[in-house]
Image (tube, rainbow, N blue to C red; front, side, top):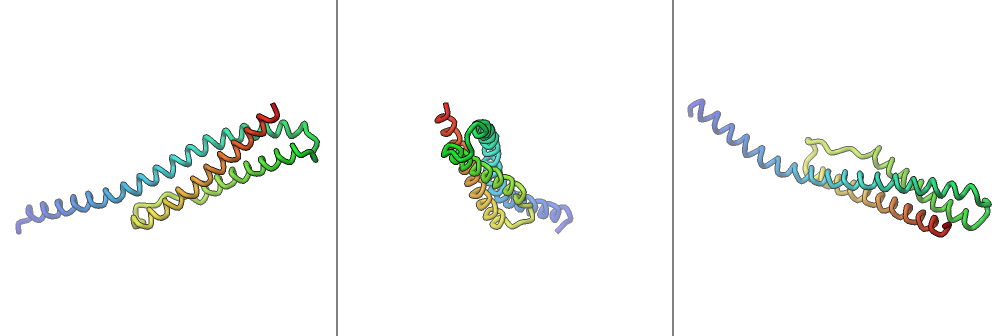
Length: 139
């Protein structure tokens, strides 16, 4: 074969490989985007949770320490702190998969990360909603 033919064959093989691998990589990129979207939503919800938590702390300062109301507020504040700590733990341990990680491994890792961050988001929502209920009782 002539040199030009070899260049054409190599270019064609390279294009096929690029198309095949870019398609599989998009599944990883899409799942990674889903994980980060859940994280971003959870961060907004955590900020709201913390605002409600500050309002509960103001109320707590006005209550006797051994009152049932203070106990309820402390329990919700503890729930909030755990949700917040879990978020920071997730952010510390999360590492986007590299392009060198096999697709199957990357997808398994991202599915687990999605499960973890979705659970944390639900914990944040539960703590926030419990705090809002306590605030409504106060008013």
